[in-house]
Length: 344
Image (tube, rainbow, N blue to C red; front, side):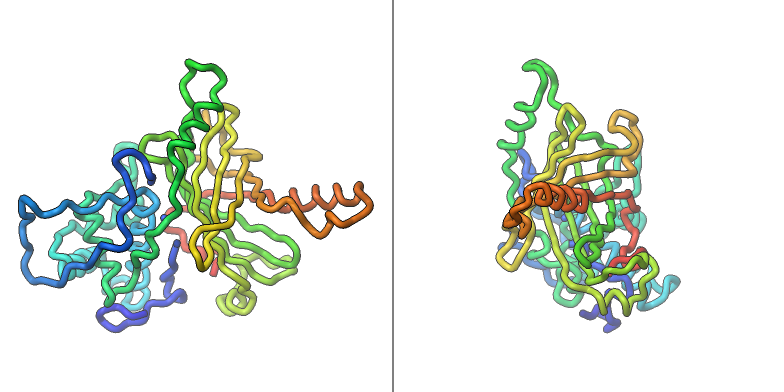
């Protein structure tokens, strides 16, 4: 993978791909088959009256674009040096490829999720589309239409579920706390393997649901050495597989975040798995960023122990496996690089 200037873009340079609102009213995902990059041009052309407006990106799609932009910036800085590549250079490159001018400070604020007036800085539809067009250009090759595909969310079913969970008929439905939004990381050990899991939580536009984006690097390792102490060589040597999941969730009146996930394979998002909340610090009612999430992950209820004749031993094994599937997610910053904290 190379940039226009020919400098290599690699994971070693920090060029990591997070795989990233909602399929809600007036916020349908963009088509992943009809978008095309505009050819480079030296002059900016005003929008004609009958020219179609930029597509609406969903929140997970906006998150993918944001994180890919930040990854591109970090990779270019690693290749050229921090003093030789700034957000001004990114703005100039986007204009060169798309004819759309974006202020370099705005790019920085969007890519690093800076907060203004209690809201994360976003980007206008035109600017967001220009950023995607730039990143997906074959010469940049930092994002693709395939990266923006996501499983369809059964929004009406989700709303019915939220309504059904209410205590009383006229009581307002429980909505996820805005303090839940962010990026989390968990390390899980089980059966001779260790998993580095990153979970991104996004609140839907109408505030009724959360959208969940998960990446997992799995390593063959039975020792006790902390992943943060691993070298790049150790990560590559022990790497077993990479998993990617997408899903959505609701908050019950008991403050139980329930997540419904689909795991991605070669044929798209297929296999199901689920999350239930075991604990949260601080409480959702404390009006402060959630720092710790204890989530129970579960999928298939069967195992080799189901053939055991000793049912007491069978139950003990089931209990052990359940405990091993409780994940301790801790908040990390939006731009924190897993490769510098133990990921691959």
